[in-house]
Amino acid sequence: MPLFESPHAEHDEIVGADAATRALSVTVVETDFVARVYEKLASTYDFTFGPTLHPGRVQALQRMGIRSHDTVLEVGVGTGINCTLYPRDCHVTGIDLSDSMLEKARERVSRKGINNVRLLEMDAAHMKFADDTFDIVYAPYVISVVPDPVAVVREMVRVCRPGGKVIVLNHFLSPNPLMAWVERAISPFTVHIGFKSDLDLPAFLAQADLKPVSIEKINIPRIWSLVTCIKA
Ligand SMILES: C[S@@+](CC[C@H](N)C(=O)[O-])C[C@H]1O[C@@H](n2cnc3c(N)ncnc32)[C@H](O)[C@@H]1O
Image (cartoon, rainbow, N blue to C red; front, side, top):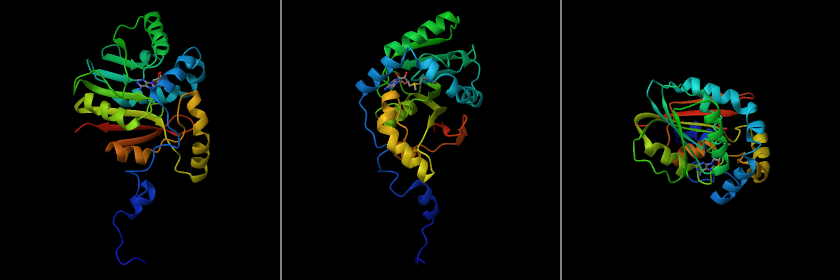
């Protein structure tokens, strides 16, 4: 029995005392590599990642509480699969790195007659928006795709207005040791189909200095997390 029990001992067991410094994933990717992967995925994305991830997209939009005239930034808008889900009386900006994915999004927006969404080619790690621009900044299934998740979420916080919401929907490393072992083992392979399977949520939150107001497990199976933060 230690002489002095750390008040943080239980918290450290879950988060890990080294959360602020440990690697977020066993894999490292470059922006060019990610761009090449998504250039190739663009034609099949809606079939491969469409229906399976869609319940999470719908739930996230329901939880988001978008109000009339809100400005929303979707980071990594991809083929624009979320565009039909936004209420028509808000203003959505979608950014993406991949021209081929954006081309699909442009086709979708025009086919569906959506006129409250603008689409821009931009790197989420270096956004060209002024500070405090948007009411809601949302990254669905993106944060485990980008080379530097902390840099991206810092940009998301920067462009969100004080009191606005920063929301991340993503799969993270399982707290179950066996599952985590598998997710780390396959991560060098899953990057070739567009994502790291072993992004460490506690380390990501610690390193990005994020203090979520809620973390909800969503999708089926419930291995994806909807992380909601309010900008101070
Ligand atoms: C898994 S898809 C998610 C698409 C969509 N949000 C959805 O709900 O299905 C990830 C998207 O992030 C984009 N992406 C990857 N790195 C990016 C970056 N640095 N900046 C902007 N977009 C990026 C990819 O091109 C791809 O379209």
